[in-house]
Structures are given as structure tokens and as C-alpha cells.
Image (cartoon, rainbow, N blue to C red):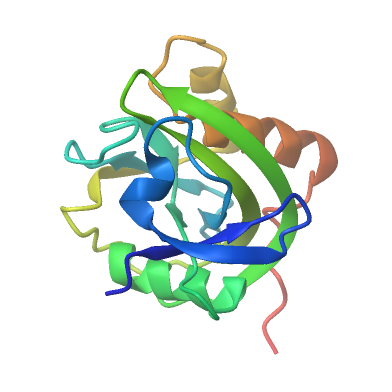
Length: 180
């Protein structure tokens, strides 16, 4: 498994490669990432509780899958790969938007990511890998929004940012795409 991340400038142009752990230490180094929102045919969203062994935001709730593409790997391919590796889900991912954020986790480290947000649809059983995910839960938009209204609820900062933008700028993001 590749443990390198792609360092990028503000326009997402690669400027180097760095060990994933090193890229997250201190204030973090800007790197390419992705975040997948998985939705079932009933319109429910899969949330995951990050494994307790994660360096940053352990045991926090987040969207279905977040990770980093390997050097030279396309975002959509990396996102589909990680859905399969982390959750046992085979699904293609559709790009929605990108954004940059910088969030510190105490003195441990930080995320400084140019994050590509994608959506996928599947009704397959979820088979989480324990090293990545401690728990999963399917929730409606209303349930998620209600939980996120509590500023102290243990959700990752990127998920909070993405959720607000998804609801305001991509209101039909959970509409399943027609199958060919």
C-alpha cells in the first residue's frame, strides 16, 4: 500500500510527494485528498465513525470515506478504490466540487488539504475494515443536519464544511444518477 500523498499548490498542481504521516504533522502540508458521500436508493447517507487508532480525529463521525490518491492516480479511481478497501463497496464516484481547508487537531497535527468531494450510490452491504472504521450508520439528511446542529458533536471539520456546502450549492447531490 502506498503511503505517499501528492503535495499541491492552491490550483491543485502537483509540487511534490510526501509521506502521509509527515504531511499531517505540525501545521500540515497542503496535499490532494478526496471525500466520498455514499448514498443508498432510499436517499440515506452512510456515516462512519473513524477508528480509535487514527492519528487525527479518532472516533469522530464523518462521511463514508476520505483518503488520498496515490501519485499519478485519478481522483475518481482513488475514491472508488478506497470505498472498496475501507467499506467493501463497489461503486463509481461522481465529482461534485473541490475546496481547500486547514484544520488543526490539538498539538498532534493538522489537515491541510485540497479536497475533492464526490458522491456514489450503492445499496450493497457495508463491510467496514476495523483499522479504518469503528462503526457505520445510515442516516437521512434531516437526521444528519440535526446532529450537526450541535457544535460539540464529534464530527470531523471537513464533514461539517462539506455538508453545509452540499446542502446550499448542490441540493440534488443525493439524487441517484440513472443507470445506463
